[in-house]
Amino acid sequence: MNRHLPNYLRDVIGACEDALQNKRGAMLDILPTMVCRELQVTGSPYITSNSPMALSYHSVKRNVSNRGLPLPRKIEFGAAVYLKEGLIDQIIGTKDDATIIVIGDSNSDKRLAYNAKRLLSTFSQSYDFHCFISNSDLVSPLGGPEDGSEKGKSKKVTTGWDDEQLFYHAESWSELSAVRSLIESKQRTDNIILVIDLDGTLMCPRPTYSDTISGARFEALKMFSATYFDARLFDVENPEHVASLDEAYKLAGRTGFSKAFDDADLTALIALGLYTGIVHWKDQLLNPANGLGFVTLLEWLQYADFVMENHKTRAGELEEIRNLFSDCTERVNQGEASTFHAFREKEELVLLDRAAENEVPINGHVVRLIRDAARLGAVPIGFSDRPNASLGLETIDRRASICAPSAGERLCNTPLPLDGLDD
Image 1 (cartoon, rainbow, N blue to C red):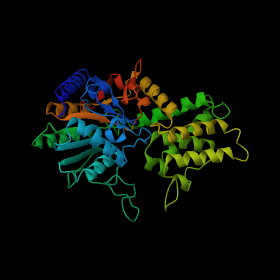
Image 2: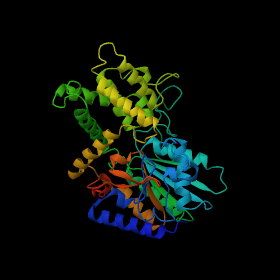
Image 3: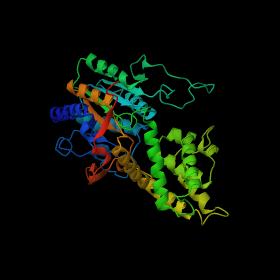
Image 4: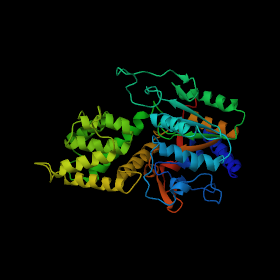
């Protein structure tokens, strides 16, 4: 067991109790150890010591000699490997049994739990995995496509624990009491790790605040377009331009490619392609089927870049957006975590503005669970696909890949109002 755990749990309990009492709390206080899209750990005395409580992806032994490795997303098996070697081994140790409970709202959270369970099933130690999901829109039990049956009909999962106690599908965050009961039922509680998602789970809990995040992302895309593109391509004062971009963003989110890839950067870039008219949202390339269509982000970027460069009549008009896509392609080729970095920076600014109006809440049910679990000895950590830039985090130690809040008010350390305390 990591020697920092007693002090870490004390700090987490204190932060949660303050948040519950004051009805406001900051994400980085509630979860001092947080890992986002870059798979960097947030700096603290628990991380910067000679016995760190967690390692970044590039500090894990297998990755130290090759920093050019692409960073896996939460839905990929590489994230499950990182969960084991960068987090479980550091917190619990390499020889002890462990129980991992993932708390989230999306298929990516389900995939993380399922992939990790499959990968660690052959170890001599016992690794138990459980995943609590609150999202009534999910349909496939293993986090697969929406087509839940062979005939193409959607198949809703039942609520509660499944037969293996791997997934708990909830209709309300108040059902987190089932996780509390699960922890209490374990013979040991000091070898339990809670892996807490951010978007839709800790921050802006689904379903009540789903539109808060999607709305902020459209505003961020609009802000970016207003500053990056010539007014002939996009004029924020032109209602037709704004309405067209809004429609393009909504349609982008409905494409099969966007749904399967589950990445806000990709959705925004698809929206720009739809806005310029170089592709239709029902195009098979954006809705993969029968082995045809885009599978990776790089394919979409390369396609769009080529189409714009060789457009018969609009090549000059589309030069600015083509330059953006070229920049994004370069970021992908260099292994950068966030493809559309400027868009994510704008997203944080929008969310900070909305936070000032108390429109960006923290999930009170999750805060209660974190406090109660920590009291029992379980270790809560944050794990999200949200990029650092969208939270106001920046790299402070490139060698150790540690991040911390940038100067000034940042979303990660801004006290946000708690929601759900009266449920």
